Length: 276
Image 1 (tube, one colour):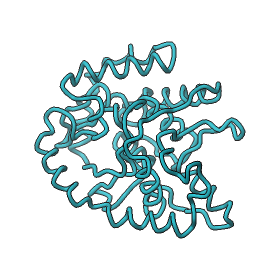
Image 2 (cartoon, helix red, strand yellow):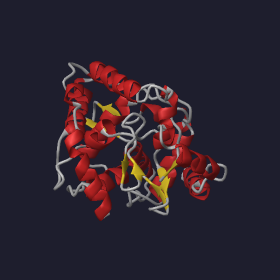
Image 3 (cartoon, rainbow, N blue to C red):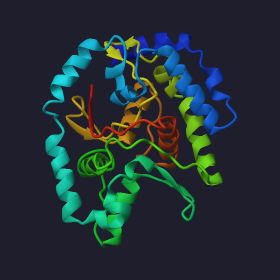
Image 4 (cartoon, rainbow, N blue to C red):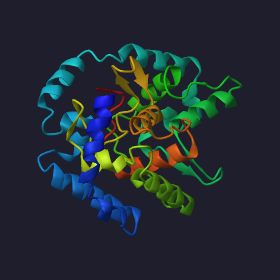
C-alpha cells in the first residue's frame, strides 16, 4: 500500500484534463470523454474497453493471463449461487421482461421517488415486496452474486441511460462533480487516475481507463477472494487516496454510478468479470 501511495502521489503533477469538465451538456461530456480515450489509445477498439485494463497497451502479459483465467472463471460458483437465489425467491416477477436484457438501462432516475435507482436497490425492494428480509451486505456475498446473475442476463446489451428528466440531469451533475473533485489526503480525483493517467503503471498495477468502468461489475478480484459490487470498488478507491469512504448505495455513490455509466453509453455489458 505504501508503494502504491508514493507512486500515485507522483502522478499528481501530470493532470491536464480540465477541458473535459466544462462541456455544456451530458452529450457534450460524452463526446469529449470518448474523444480523449480514442486519442490516448488509438489502437483499442471501442467495444474492447469493456474488458477494462486488459484491453490497454502494455497489458499484453496480463491479458494473456486473464484470458487463461477466463477459461474457468473464478466467479462461476458464486454466479450459480446468485442464480439459485434469484430463482428460489422468484425475483424475476419484479422486473420487466423477467429481468432479461434490462440491466443496460441501470441506474435510472425514478421520477416518483425522486432518486437514482440501482440494481442493488431494486433487488432489495423486490424482496421487501415479497415480505422477505432485504440483503444487508450491499458490497459482497449474496448481493454481489444476485446482481452478477441479473447483469449476466443482459450481457452484450449496450449501455443506454435515460437522462431526459431534469432530476436525472441534476443527479448526473452531482456524480460528475464527485468524479472530477479532489479529495482525501492525496488530493486526488477519480479522473487523475482513470483519465489523466489511464494505462500507466503505479506500484506494479496498471491504472484502468475511465471508459469501461462498471460494465463488468460485480467483479471477482483476487484481493477480495470473491465477487464485489461497484460501490465496494468505489470504497477501495477512496481508501487508496486516503479519502472518506461513503456507505454503499449512498446518494453520492449512486450519482457517481449514474455519471460513470452514462460515460459508457454504447459499450456492451460483460458481467460478471475478473479484475486484478
